[in-house]
Length: 254
Image (cartoon, rainbow, N blue to C red; front, top):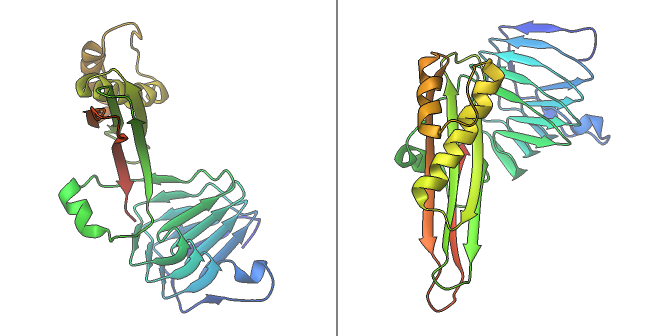
């Protein structure tokens, strides 16, 4: 698919195979979009395979996908979807499940300054999330990491999350790592960073010099931000100088 914009609705694309000899022939087992902006609605991509993008591959494209399902697709890169060369798909109310990549990105793989926007995602608990992943699995994540071999040095790693009330709008995830900060301080900083970025895009008025606890109440009172939170891990360096590492992460499942 390419320009002019195409529309695809209500189809099931099954058993496609992009295993050709040419580079283009290896892209998108189910669908390949180059320099296009197709709208794909209520479609299912299942049982497709390719080298780049089992279900779909986008090259310099900006597709809109709504209420679609990508399931049991396989590829070397991007089992469900592969985005290449500044492709920025808008993905809303879609499900990625049971896809597999032999190299990178079982659900979605991005290469070359791609910026996909995924909306209407669900936040699940750590316990439930661990049930959904397997040892050695490659996932998308935002991770904060800090380490030290200085005895008794305090290190912290934190991720912050801000979720808008309008599920059609994207939220923000931040990461922060530091030395000499308590877990509470590092966690609050990461949460503040995510919430403030979201508040800025939503046009919420606030005083940047105000303390985080006060601004947090302003953000909540605006009725635009549904939730903000943080996850933090801190530790003191081993007293004998062995390396100590702390990690905090948000893991994305498709």
